Each structure stands twice: as C-alpha cells, then as structure tokens.
Length: 116
Image (tube, rainbow, N blue to C red; front, side):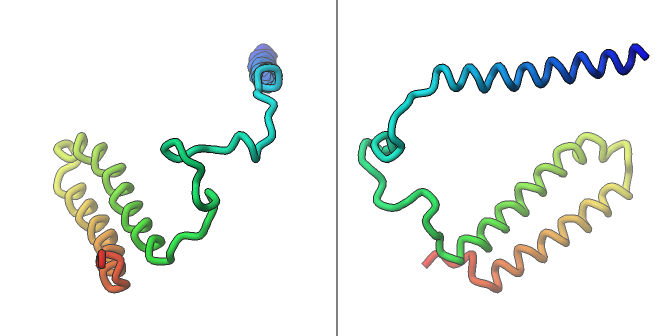
C-alpha cells in the first residue's frame, strides 16, 4: 500500500506545482493589449504576420534537414557501440544511410537543392 501512497504524494506535488506556477504567472503577467505590445524585428514592427505562408519549396528542404538531423541523432550512439557490435552494426548503419539517401535523391529530383 505504501507504493500507492508514494504515487499519490508525487501526483499531488506535480498538480500543486502546476497550479502554483499558473498562479505565479497570473500574478506577474503584464496586462497589456496584444496589438500594442507586439513583437519587434530589429527595432521595427514586422511587415507580415508571424504565421504567414511560406513557399512550398521550403517543405522539401525542411524534410531534408530533418533527415540529416535524425541521421546525426542515431549516429552518435552508434559510434560509441560500433566496436562492440561488429560488422552487423556497420551493415545496419549503411542500410539506414541508404534510406536517408533516398530522401536526398527525392529532394534533388524535386529541385530543393537549387538555390536560384
């Protein structure tokens, strides 16, 4: 029964922390109209809205960036254990890189790597 008591205490502390932080925010928040207290871009008001549309070509470029980002996410731990795992780990990593290369070839075919 003490396990449930511990879980209940932790749950109570978590809920109390969330309620306390929300109350602290409500007490210390600046009360201003959002249109007058907007963000500034290098000292000037922005020309367009923050959620304005982007050109469709940035979608493929973003996917390409995420592919390389995920690649690095998996390569760092792999580099630590590749000596222990042996040739199987090398084959698996090259298979993974091959799949990512398919994404790079798709981006190249779609023209995401053309800058002009």
